[in-house]
Amino acid sequence: MTSADLLVDAFGRIKENVHGAVEGLTPAELATRPDGDANSIAWLIWHLTRVQDDHIADVAGLEQVWTAQGWAKRFDLPFDDSATGYAHSSAEVARLDGVSADLLLGYFDAVHDQTIGYVSALTDADLPRIVDTRWDPAVTLGVRLISVVDDDIQHSGQAAYIRGMLLRRR
Image 1 (cartoon, rainbow, N blue to C red):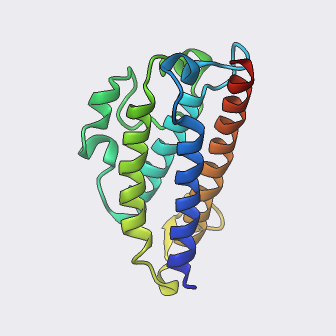
Image 2 (tube, helix red, strand yellow):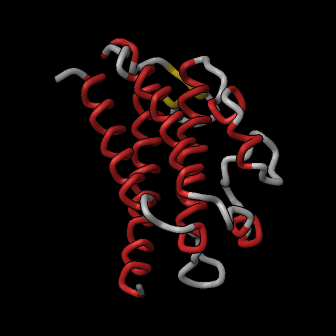
Image 3 (cartoon, rainbow, N blue to C red):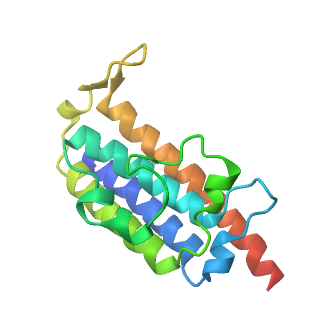
């Protein structure tokens, strides 16, 4: 197994997690928040997808799927196109209310396709490349990719937990 194979597998598992958390839920269920300031499934999935889109596009030298494929217009959110959800307020989280499973999964799948296209071509020699010098130590491509995987797994797990709560209430 190569590093590329490992990354493809990891991002594939994230796709399974995201679809498992979202499929079959109504917009109202996707917007449900366990308490007044908690994140909803809709926001969690949008956020993890925005982070993946932002970070992969940056290291790959590509335009983000969000803008390149018109997803920003389809979502029609009152955020700057560069917003990823980092440090969003409770009121901003609520702006994802009413988003459908099809819209969330459509955007996620488009980002996933771009991600797989990029990581499947990587070699071990690509991973030590410095991609962010704002940190000490500087961030390598390998570290950045694992950071995205980690963030996505955490947020998709949070979404799955909320889904489980919702299904028990049905």
